[in-house]
Image 1 (tube, rainbow, N blue to C red):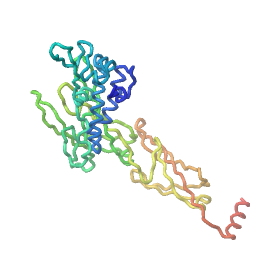
Image 2: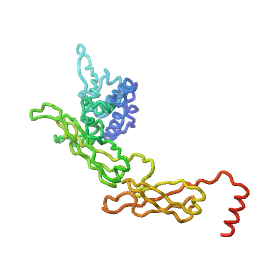
Image 3: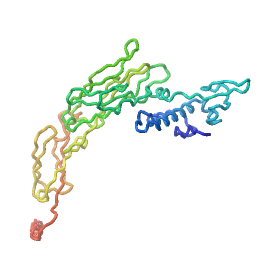
Image 4: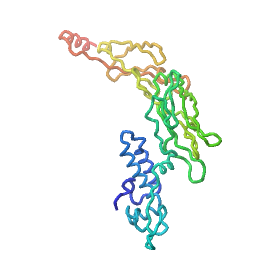
Length: 345
């Protein structure tokens, strides 16, 4: 049969329309040349193969010809009369010859995703160039963030003639633990394509203000509706920022709790210890540890954890764990003294 379109599209021979679409979406996004800048030549060839396979298998008549005659049937065999997607010609009254004319891979991709190049400009994170897409550039606001956006995969709507909406563009928004404890405001300058009343494209710049609420967790989403590029026949995509938490040098977050680990000696573990801590909002805490500290012991300080967004005024707990440093050696006198003390206790 030559080229195996079913294998290329990673579907079986009984695959339904939804199976074909699902597989095409996945593979086209994976092998789009713009997403493979270090392997662009091979990715482009793979991308075209995937598109051609979908073009054939998604058309019932083309698929029927392919299933019956294989790749050669698409290139010149005699398929059933009236097969769509083929051009006809005759040579002196002989049988009509049909030949498959594959559609452009970019055209097929655009039908699914609203753009033939959704990844453009993502690699240039520092220049502020738009690279032809909806871009975010550095601005002069101190605590600004910078990322590059492009209208990405997918669309909503169907064949009813109603405008489709491009899939939301999502980006991680790294925040320090201090940002998430106290709350903060970040600003972003965006540039995007818009269309005037006559349908001509132009560039518009806008500053988005992102309010980070105290206590927000990793995974929280902030959505700016329809801030993507404007394209004819499409509703602009939403821009979505997803909170990501940067590692902290002292504290680790566990839900609404904060965890800190302190190194103490065996003597301190047995006789008492005072923990000195600076909170995420800059306060100094002095916490006496009067209990005997074993390797699994935690000192819990109520109300010194992360703010709880749904319960204003309330916070989680601060949990202090301990890394006990044992002596590497003891003298005979020390061993005798420890035995005497522990035996008599």
